[in-house]
Length: 575
Ligand code: DGT
Ligand code: CA
Image: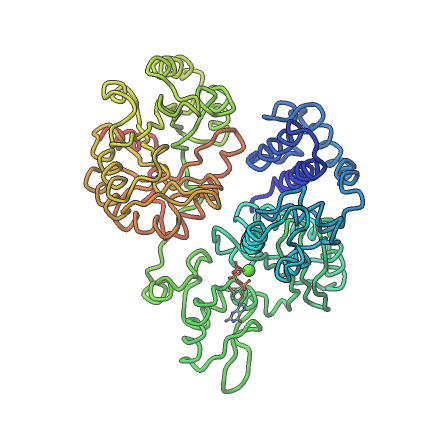
């Protein structure tokens, strides 16, 4: 389970709120911007902010000065931030949510509260629908329509939470529940256990001899914004991060059956139940029962449950009715890659381009993880915005790598995340690329090219003899940028033809390739590079997210480039 980090999101949310409240009060743009920047820093930090504070590193973070560091310290120490409370003043508790609606500016929100008493999303929507809003604080019909659109986008945006955020929240809830005692067994179920890239809610199952105590702890968690439902063995809360968390206490004899049922997916469960029925069995969240006698024949563990219907245990990531039932019946389930299989990172940035650490700091951290190799892949010259390396700086970096190599056991491979220019040429001359151990190819510009042009651009890069790995092949950024329009099957075919690898980029905002595409790429027989694209040390941990994507793509260790030992990898790069 991924642990660190939930405080990062809590504090980031408060900083966003401060920025919006300052805006509503027409304070200085400079201060507003400072809080927004600090929020972004925290959201992308990847390391628990508490750990950073503990080693006195807050003021070393981008955009965090003395004032903001003090606010973070205050929150870590007290669980609250007085400044937010002062700014909220007499505004209603739900007012911050109004500030999240696109199309409604903070000043207008404040005016609507003062003039119409609007304090919740529902009241805002009502006022839009009845037209009461029109003419107030300069709102016209066009603004009203924009606000209505903003409300539905806000609802849609809140319905699903990114995997890494949900993992951090779930990890924290599980820790607190465990620490309070009374729990025998605890498991995350649902889409989170299956590793979907976004989840609607967090489903938790426990066994306990003191269910009342566990329920009490759960409904009184400090991070509980509201208790939505509460019974003797089940409760649902609204977590302050905006998603529901569901807790069920089940009997130990039924724990496996409940885990199987609530892990889903629904489509997978339908198939398993059909198989049970054909065997004269009935499968429910309480166990597997003999239809004729009513006797329970399995339920304590998932293994027993699957065995009772004649199937091997199926990894949760595969339970999407995507062929896993057929594979299980044929004894052909894949052995999936694990984080422990990973022997190196193939995509990493240093402060030579837009990374946060010097080369040797990054290398030391990768070595400390037990990796055998790491590819240093800073940006190329065209990506000026990320301080891309010129030819001269690329050569200087290579020299530095040779100089520091003797200090390390880990093998440092000189690479580049080299831009694929709009016409498919590479951003460095061939002789420079020839001097590198590995070349990563990436699209960072002209995302809007039409499909044929984008496809031939990328295919041309894959034809280049020095290119090794196509990175973030769809270019999407979850929630902010659509994938570019490209014929991925043509790209995969070209990669196959030319012996190239494609990436699963583990960065939480990318997860690119996404699982379905990664599965197709692997089926083409293309080696898959699971990388972190790290820009700072904590992001090395993101490898776990990329591994989850790979598992959902049915990928085994033999299909992954960086499960190979160093010599094997070098043989491949020199192919
Ligand atoms: P999501 O939308 O990200 O929460 O996805 P899930 O799969 O976690 O869906 P959720 O939380 O509604 O339900 C968790 C699991 O419980 C689901 O995967 C299968 C099982 N389940 C829930 N409701 C039903 C139902 O009405 N019928 C069946 N067969 N299974 C259900
Ligand atoms: Ca769920």
